[in-house]
Structures are given as structure tokens and as C-alpha cells.
Image 1 (tube, rainbow, N blue to C red):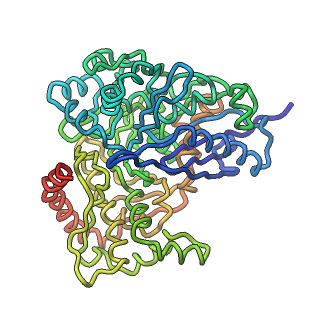
Image 2: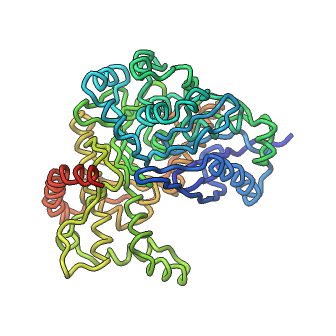
Image 3: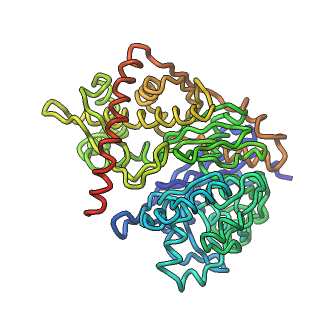
Length: 511
């Protein structure tokens, strides 16, 4: 009999899908990555082709098994994590009715304004502990219902990204408690959809997938999915959770009070908590944890690594070409340039609100800017200013969490941004937090998903037992020579937001 000693985990992100093979301790055996695109039909609209996402999952499943030189029968189980806060309506057979509306999409601003009316806002907060923005799922559902009424009538289930992949693998319609709480229609205590919230908004509760614990075996790989992925039919699939929760687990931060930082396309700071807390005035995320006895209280900025990605794509064609010739990454060259610039970027501030902002300011009109540009500034200054701007926003998030009595001095860090020693040091200096960079930070989410599978299949008794499995690669401490200086600049950053707030909304209205 073939010994089952591996776990296959997928991290279906905004820019691509990562397939990771691990052993039962979460050690990476092999990983592969497949990029896919985004679609921009109109200003403020961002979509993705769900079939392209599924093809990436299917093809990387075959590739990682082949290149990892294992047998499909050696895989104990499969787990999926993915980007969150997307909307994909499907029919009764699971066929998408439209492209997936991305979490980056802001077409539903008018619906968000409706939801944020005082009486609705208060009801949603009372029922779910959260308040949606234009980038969240509730306004997207309301937009879809109003603009595509015939398709809405044909809708069987309203899914997020991961739930579609789960359906393609197993044929089941289900959602984990963490993912359900991200709909902001979920009672975080009772672990069920809030009928009152759904009734208030006219969203049929039967259109929402059945919520189950994150460690549940939701189904098995079907015959058709086996044909497409190369996996063995009947391989168990654990439902896992979205990117926020698996980053908490993959960073080794499951114990109550432990904090993690993720710098991916978006960036956030999350804390494991045995108490459900949030702020109605300046809302954070209050989401169900993979551990059913806990919650993740988190603050997220919409374009963390995404701000640097945008900067590279728009302004750094030359650096990208140079990097290709040298066989290195454009981000490596940009980091080298930024390292030559002194802290503070010679008086240049960057506002990283390129797609609205969520925390700790709920403002879908917020937009990016450079302030303080002079003739002396070079591309290197602009690059460092981007890195510092993201760090300032993360400090603001840390302060918002601490105002909820969630105190912390150190964070375990994952995500692509944390592969940059310079950016990690800047974040540490600006936030005055110690960063513990985990080993293979790019794979933190996928490792978290794999370990969630291990708990679901009984390899480990609970989530907290996983923390000791996560290795720290390096520790970065704040440099006191820069912390006070950055504190002064941070105050100007906060003032910049206040000064630009009205201008950004007016520019949106005029465009």
C-alpha cells in the first residue's frame, strides 16, 4: 500500500495560483506558480475569469506532483486558500454567470453608500460585528441584483473565489466560517448566516453556501476533477480558509495575542483573539479564526505590495528590462536603488491608497499621491517613498488595533514584501515593531492551508499545536536612530490624508 505522506495546498491569489507540496509537518517539498490576468472593462471595474483561475489550479496540481517526483496516491489530502472579498454568482450546476468581480473592484460605490446609511450600518454591525465598503461582497451583491436582475434570478449560489475552486474539486457548495464571516452577513457567535441582515438587504439566505468549520472535510476529488488535476479520485479535500486566516496559521500565530503581518498584493496586520472586538467608527476586520474558539481581528490596506507592483509596471520599464538581462528581479533592482536613499526620501511622501482604503479609515474615495516632489527627486526617491508610504499605513493600522486593547510589540511576517530586507527594516523602523520573518515567507499562506488540512485529517489535535512547527528565518528590530524621525514624518502622513480626503472625493465625482 502507498504511504500517504504529503499534503497539496493551493493559494489562489490575485495575480496567480501557487501550488505547494508539503510533508505532514508543513515542510515544503516543492512549489510552482502560474500567473493569470485581471480584466478592466470600465473605470473602477476589476474582474477575473474564474475558468482561468481553475485551469491554473488544475495545471499546477499536475506540475507540482510531477516536478516534486511523488505519486498522486501519496497525497493525504488537499486544501485550498484564496483571495477573499470577491463575488462569483453561479447557477445550479456551478457554472459562472459572470466573470468574478474582484475585491479590487469599486463599481458598487452607490450601493456601499446605501449600506452605510445609519440604520443599515447599525443593524449590520449589531448582527455581524462588521461594516462593508464598496470593495466588499454586500455592495457587489446589491449591484449585481440591480444591474443584472435576470441573471440574479438564475443564481443558485453566491460564491467567493475559494468556494468556486472547492466546487470544481468536489462538486459541493460550501464555505468555511472564516470565509463566511468575510461576507459580513454571518453571525460570528452563532456561526450561521444572519437572517436579519439578509432580510434587511433583500439577499436570499438560500443563495449563500452552507457554512462549515475550516478544518472540515468538505468532500472528495471527483472523477472529473481527478481527470483535470491528475489527483486520485476520492482524495479528501479540507475546506481550509481564505488568505487572512491561513497567513495567521502559516506565520505561527495561532495562540491568543500573537500577531502576524502579511505584505502581499494587499497588506494587513492580524491578531488571534479569544474576544470579539471591533470599532463601529473606524472598523477593522473581525473575522472567525480557523480555530473555532477564536477570532482574527485585523486591519488591512488595499494596496500594500500592490502599490509597489503598480509602480514597477507603470514607471519602471527600463529597470524591468535591465533585470531581465541580468537574470534577476526588477524588484531587486528597485530595492538596491531605494537603499541608496536616506530615510524620509528627501521630504517625499507617498499615499498608497490606490484603490480606496479600508483600515483604519473606511474610504472608498481615497486615492494615491506623492507630496513634496522637487527637482532633486529621482526614481530612487520615488521608490523608497512607496516603501515608506506602505509602512506608514501599517503603523496606522497597528495603532488602531492597540486602541482595541490588542497590544503587541512583535509580529511574525509573511508575504512577498517580507522577502525584501530593506522593506522589512523600513516597516520595523516606522511601526517600532520587531518583525520575525518566517522561513519561505512567500509560501506562508500555502503552508498555513497545508497545516489546516493536517488538523482536519487528524494529524494534529488543534491549531495552537502548529505554532511550534513554523521556523523563523530572521528577526528584524527597529533602528532607534530612525524611529523618532519616522514618527515625525508619520504625523505629516496622517495630515496628508486629511488634506487630500475632500479633494479625492471631488476628483472622483468629476471624473
